[in-house]
Image (cartoon, rainbow, N blue to C red; front, side):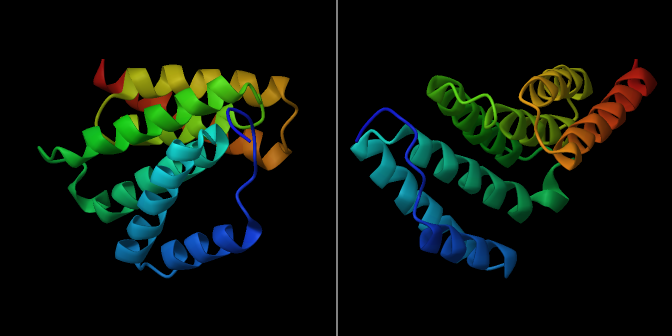
Length: 156
């Protein structure tokens, strides 16, 4: 089945999550990269969006301490997250878009782009409310938006 939402198998999600949560970023990177390539070849947009988002988060966490210095990796994180967002938008499932926007907004904020972060996070809040997501997900998006707006105001 191609070009539609097809959930990755639960056991795979568990393997990826275990590697990521254990801090084994090399293994998580390998698994997400492999999954991304397989999903792209199969035309599985949902699988590709999941793997691309996961890969971006691995890059983000590997480089967390480096995000405020002149390092090219934040651009790669934002590129991967942007690709994940585009795939989620292509799928058309409004419940999947806000989390991609929050992740991208966080990466933009960490890279020093507070205004762009606030724009993405504002859209995430609106879409999360419209999709009637769980209250904690809406609160998370709202909290990130408040932080981005405060930084944007303070930096002019």
